[in-house]
Each structure stands twice: as structure tokens, then as C-alpha cells.
Image (cartoon, rainbow, N blue to C red; front, top):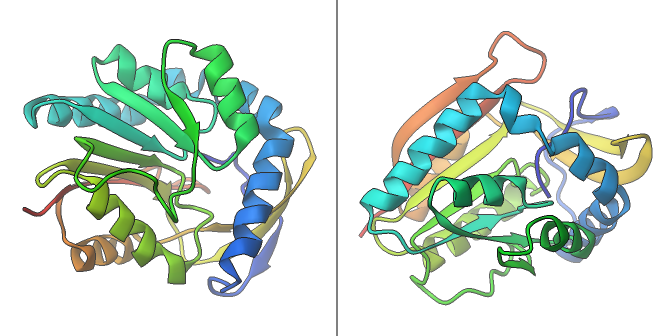
Amino acid sequence: MTRTESPLEDRNAPGSPSRNTDDWLVDARTSYDTVADSYANFVRDALATEPYLRASLALFAELVHAAGDGPVADVGCGPGHVTAHLHELGVDAFGIDLSPAMIDLARRDHPDLRFEVGSMTDLQLADASIAALLAFWSLIHIPDDAVPSVLGHFHRVLRPGGPLLLGFHVGDESRLKTQGYGGHPMNVYVHRRQPDRVAAWLRDTGFTIKAQLLIGPDTDAPGAILIAVRQP
């Protein structure tokens, strides 16, 4: 589950729908398994044209080094392009994604890096076991009522003082996406959120906000980057 193309959605849905966790996770897994190849082609060179995203990742890498390095989880890594970029910046990054098809592509394209199937709703990582964590446009399919639990997992697995980077779509609506990436069928909600709301969730979970960047505020698809650290 990673970054989405623009236009992002197919029809409006008021608010952020609450569904059985198994239902929306299955829908997300199936959707991204279906579009894995076309999605990988879509994002393969995406960072080359996004200087603000590259700068954010460079800052994140610098924070990782300043914190003493160690394993860094790219949660919702998709086909592994951001994981690989972090590796090029000297970060010991590994990827986790809900979609087995995405993980197969990541392992194929980046055979020297570690990738595993997993869900951010139940991270199979030990407490305080990683130096930093990145969720790069991978919270966008998590419904509002599940976000605090997900952030709780992020807090649990991070070392005290470890940096966290979140990237997400900015807005106030949730929409159902029924096709994408070459017209393949999908069935996922895309949730746009205001940075202040995400920051409040982070503070409530035990993070301190260090930086916020709004990207493309005058476009149809603005995004935001929040960088926080786990409180000791």
C-alpha cells in the first residue's frame, strides 16, 4: 500500500468509513496484488521528478544517522523503490507490505535488500527493535478509527528518540477508488487528512513533532510530510 496516482479516486464517500478490519485489509491486499506490475512501472522513476520528496528522504536519512543508525522499516513499501533510495543514502532499510505481489516485485528488483509481507495493523517486530520508521503514503487506506492503533504499533517498535516520517494526501474527504494504474479494478478507500489532525494523533501516541512540509498546496493533489520522534 503506497502512493497513489492523481486523480486519486472515483467517487465521493462522506467521512472515513468504518469497516471490519479483515474486510478492508483483504480489499487492499487484493487491489494491490492486482495492480502490482502497473503500479511498479508508475512509481519506478517517480522520485526523480519530486525534489521535495527527495529532500525529505535525505533529511530522514540524516536523522537516522544522527540517531546512531540501525534497521529502518519502510512500512507499506510497495515495490521497494523508496526502500532502495534510502539504502543508497546509507540507511539500513528493509520493506514491509501487505501485498505479496508487491513484495515479489520488490525482491525481484532489489535482490540485495530485505522485504517481507506484513500489515501495519499488526507489525511483527519486537518492541524498540528499529532505529526509524517510514510510512510513505501508506496510511492513506487506513480508516480513521484504525489509525491510532497503527501509530501505536509504530511507537512500540521504534527505539526511544527514533525518527518517524509520514507522507500522506492532504484534504478532508474519503473516496472509494475502484480502478487505477492502467484501469485495473481496485476496491480501496483513499483517505485525505489535514496535517494538524495527523499531528494530533501522533502526539496522543507519544511522539513529538519535529517538522511539517506541505507539498503542492495549489495543486489538485496536495501532500504533506510529517517528521516526528518517539518520546523517551
